[in-house]
Length: 163
Image 1 (tube, rainbow, N blue to C red):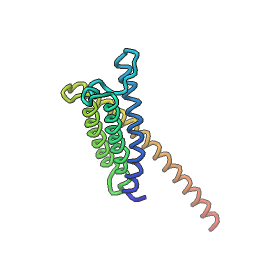
Image 2: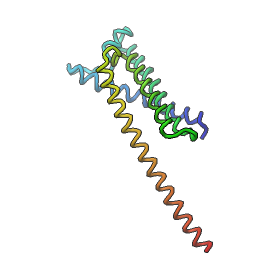
Image 3: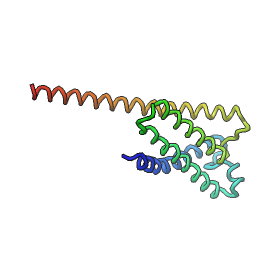
Image 4: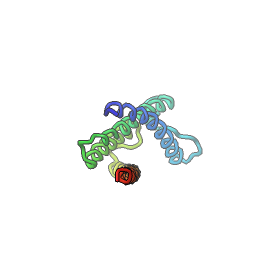
């Protein structure tokens, strides 16, 4: 598959995933943090900045869609065969973390002025990134091992037929 097509397909998937995951997480975290028994799907700061809960929800949906497109579409770098795994990971990680920082600031999830809070958030984002990366790596490694096993069986069968 061409690189451009891979980016487009992954970006479309990322659009939906970004909106869905963001809204679910924002609602869970906002509701738990508020602790008042009411549903909080967007931050009070974002509502104040946009003027209404509906506007805040729309802004949050669009910004999180952008982040999903960046994170998923950006994962296409892993298909650049000329790049090492370390380079692909570093580029994707930086894109995701910069995108998350922009998303978090725009949606008033955190401020850069509160450095300890920001660093803690980035630590947990990095931890999440590592878990997802490792799960993907181990999955691909198992798939490659299975393909190699099947190739060995095919070669052995072919050798028997020729010999």
